[in-house]
Amino acid sequence: MVDIRETSAAGGASSRRVVPRLPALVAGVMGSVASPLISFVIVLAIWSLVSALKVVPDAIFPSPWSVASAFAEMMENGVFFSDLGISVSRAATGFVIGASLGVAMGVLTGRVAVIRTVLNPFMTLLRPIPAIALVPVAIVWFGIGEGSKYFVISYTVFLTVWFNTHHGMEYIPDIYLRASQSLGASRLREFFQVVIPAAAPHIFAGIRLGVALAFLSLVAAELSGASSGIGYRLQESRQYIRTDRMFALLIELGVLGAIVDTIVHRIGKRIVHWQQS
Amino acid sequence: MSSNIAALADEGRVEIDHVSIRFTSKKGDHLALAETRLQLEPGTFTALIGPSGCGKSTLLNALAGFVEPTAGQIRIDGRPVDGPGPNVGVVFQQYALFPWFTALGNVKFALQRFGLGKTELHERAMAALAEVGLETQADKFPGQLSGGMKQRVGIARTLAYEPKVLLMDEPFGALDAQTRREMHDLLLRVWEKHKATVLFVTHDVDEALLLADHVHVLSRAPGRIIRSYDLSASRPRAISRDFPDLLDTREEILALLKPEPAEDRGDVASVS
Ligand SMILES: Nc1ncnc2c1ncn2[C@@H]1O[C@H](COP(=O)(O)OP(=O)(O)O)[C@@H](O)[C@H]1O
Ligand SMILES: [Mg+2]
Image (cartoon, rainbow over all chains, first blue to last red; front, side, top):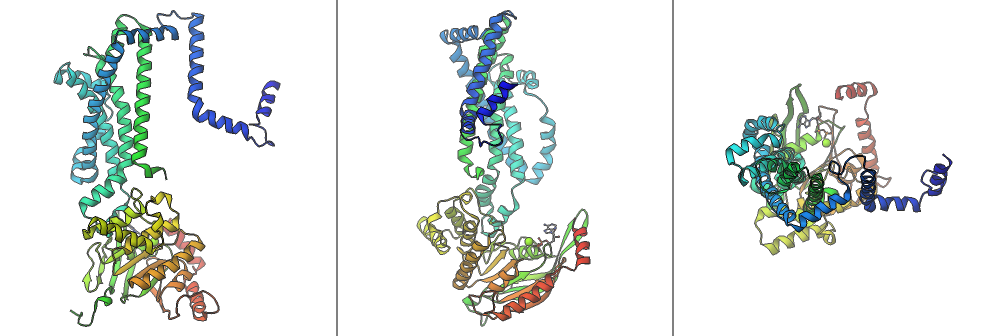
């Protein structure tokens, strides 16, 4: 009790009289820059501790060191990079197909009343179906080659991008359209210079979600009927009960997804730069 | 027809001929503007003042071609308004600048209908910005500009294509008093130069008196014109003892706009 009070008084954070200048600054910097790092260190420490105590056998819950060596092993025999390459190219191909169709569809259903009336019920029906439920259909239609993977991924991406684009297209603020019309813009110019930019923040939100979903559905697609890729390697590790590899692969997926998401987010902020103001 | 005397400088006559506007919704009909007759002579400055919700914006939207009158007709230089047209410019209260274009880009947008060459487009847009004192801010995005600067861009964008009629819907309503005064000077300056017919909606009596040749007071909703004033005081004006007529008119308008307590309560109830 006494200790805690003294610490907080010294830190100045909870003291009413002292204005917390330096500590607040330090906390701010830590919060923005170092806090992810700190949380990694803490998790790693707890993880090491738990595995050092050997409460659970290493084969079931691997230690950080065995995961690290599983990583090294996959690097050495080249599986790591070949899996990474094939998975990224599947996710990217599926994403590009799905996102372009999604944007096109969203533009149509968002701006053309007839198409909206006909197609919107399907949007509602299709959205609850998870990617993994499509795998059997995809295999029947496209076999176990690349086609079925592209199908599952692009379909999942398509739905999300469609939904978000539709939403952005449907609610263009009236004031922009009125300004555009009174300034004499043709329908075509209004579409490209007003409607599309006004909907762009929504389209980008959809694209960012689509990127995340491309990775989620990638694993679903690779869990059945693949002979390479991160998802396949996970499945293979299960057969050999290599939990160390599984952990390594899961971490790889997490890091990969986070990096790609950050890049997409940065690009989006560049392009729809006016959104922040 | 009657253009035998009408020279080029005589363009911009607005006729609001027995216009009323009704909105139909699920809840039923709603009269937004009661029958209104009004004629604006070319090059004059007219202010509309009235309680909130009385249909001022609705009337302006009809003039701009955004809304169709339920009855009556609006004509500009004899031609019925059937949608937004190049003779009418609108300056919006919320600026309505496109945030994805720079100040210059916004003005260029308005000039693109003329199919100018690249250099001329740039020069004319820059000239329009210079006219409102913003030539140094050309490459800023609206999000980087203050409210007053945004509305200057709004004015530059609209005046750039030289509309005969300029509609302004509480254009300075969101600005602070100091900026508002600067905008009044600016507006009078560009108006003297362009000589467009201006219809200016405001809820600020002083603003109407400082700017306009004619002031029309609208009744509570559904609005109709209940009083009109012609102001002959020379500009620049001030609301002070130097302009006793303006002070008198000010008192009268304020009395007209003053809500009657009992009725006022009824009004609030029916709005909510
Ligand atoms: N598009 C619309 N649809 C239905 N009602 C409207 C519409 N535009 C305005 N109104 C109604 O018309 C009335 C007058 O509105 P408005 O012209 O905006 O008033 P003012 O500008 O004088 O404050 C209000 O009751 C408003 O709710
Ligand atoms: Mg209004």
